Length: 95
Image (cartoon, rainbow, N blue to C red):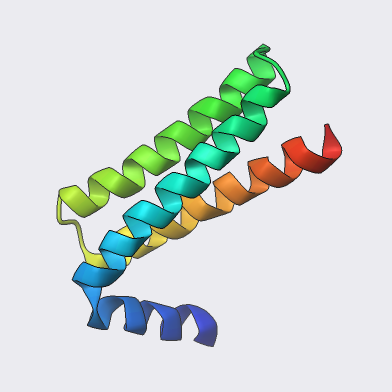
């Protein structure tokens, strides 16, 4: 838990710069995840994965624009990065 707390404190100290970099980074990662999902076809499974990626990235970006609490923004960014990375791994190695 100390890694989470330390990272959040750094994010909170320089929120404007961190949020800006997070939008760029997690959006690029989400686009990469979407590309990996769509390279395996357009079945219902891929469309569900794509929807999860799009919604988590959209929620993270919206939370920044809506000026939600810094902790909420940080958690949504982490969730977005987690799902994007998960679907990249799944579609690159397992399928």
